[in-house]
Amino acid sequence: MFTNRPEEHPKVGNAFNFLPNSIYWTIIVDTKPGKAGSFSGVTHFIINIATIVAPTLTGALVTSSGYSAMFIAAAVATIIGMIAMIFVKPGKQNQG
Image 1: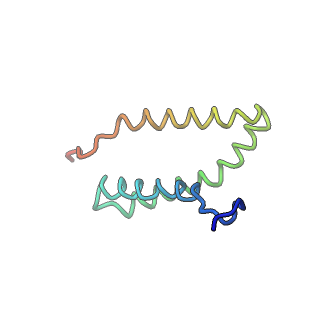
Image 2 (image 1 turned 45 degrees about the vertical axis):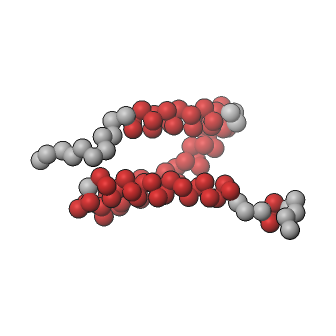
């Protein structure tokens, strides 16, 4: 039986946290199958640098500008990511 104790309920947030993983692996393999190892290494390097730098930057941003500033920064980063995806042409490969 379900109770109101949160530790007994499934963690939906954890499920959503792992959704992007399958997507970026698919993009890495589809981009250039012969260089999937190199691309995945670069991807992991960038992700791991971000996991080190992001908490520090978030703390500095909250300290200097207030708690709501991190949501504005997240929105700006999301918009930049969406604009960058305009330039991705799936199925189109460069000759050369």
